Image 1: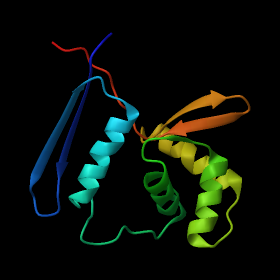
Image 2: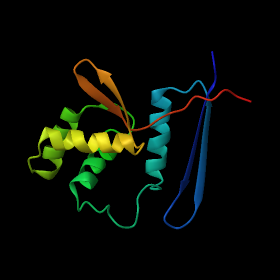
Image 3: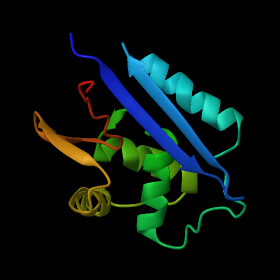
Image 4: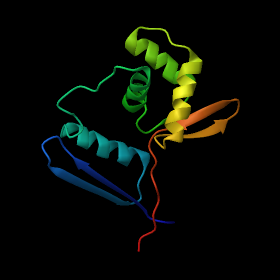
Length: 129
């Protein structure tokens, strides 16, 4: 079995650098625990709240907030968007923005039956040198 390796480098708003290396038998649960640890340290919190002045920014906020590791569809984003912002949006608009995020390399997509499935975090597997 190949060994997995994940490296997370983060710089906070004050300029401090944090490096987290995970190697060996890495599972989804272990990665989620690492992100929970980073959340406890409040590293990801920026001093200002994110600018949600466009539809694309709002959709990306939904992807980032609710699906940082898991898979999702345009329909699930539609539901979360309407719940979060209390405003209707067409499924075609969500699909268009998700397609643009794919082209920019922010998310990956794969065909699952009749629908596209998206995933926002890419975990690469590297063999130890």
